[in-house]
Image (cartoon, rainbow, N blue to C red; front, side, top):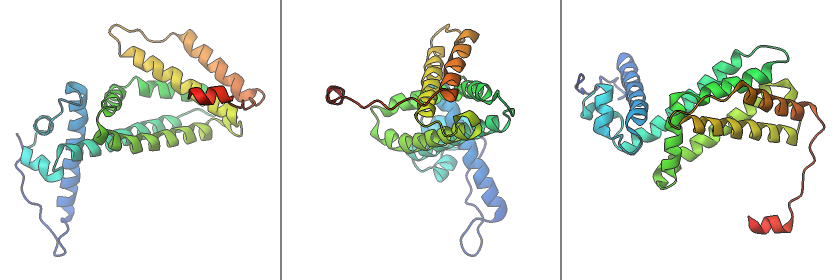
Length: 228
C-alpha cells in the first residue's frame, strides 16, 4: 500500500484546511474510480474493501476513513457511475451538429455510451440489485434520475421531437429498448456489432414517428388490465 492515513489539518472551526480538503477530495475520487475498476475486473460480489484499497493504492485504514463500510463506498460509486454517464451523454449532445441529422447523431452517441465497459458494470449492478434490497435502494434513485434527464435531453436536442406527444414516447422507448437489447447482446462471447442496416432501419422508423401524424392513444381493455 502506498499511502498511510494521517488525520487532516483543520481550521479553528474544525473544517479541513484548503489543501487538505483538496487532498481529501482527490483521495475520495481515487477510491471511487478504484471501486468502478474492481466492479469491472472482479464483479460486484467480489468487490471488497481490501480489494478496493489495493486497487486504489491506499491502506485499508485510509479508505475506511473516507468510507466506513462497503455499502458506503458502493453508494458513492453508484452515484459516481451515473454522474459519469450523464457527463458523457451531455458532452456527446453538446457536440451534435445542427440541422436535419441530429436524431441520427443522438442515436449513435447513445449507442457509443452503451458500448462502453462501464455499461456492463451497470448491468451487473442492476441484476445484483434484484436480490439485494440494500443495493436496490441505492441503485433505484440514481437510475430514475438518469432516465429522467436522458429523456428530457433527447426531447430538447432533437427539434422534430418537440410537441410530438405520444409519438415521442413511442420513438424514445423504441430506440432505448432496441439499443439496450443490442448492448446486452454484445456482452455475449464473440457477439458482433449490429449492422448498418439495423441502424438505418431504426432511424427510419423513428423518423416516421417524428414527422408523421400523432399516434392515437389506445385505451386498454378490461381483459388486458386483468392480465396485468
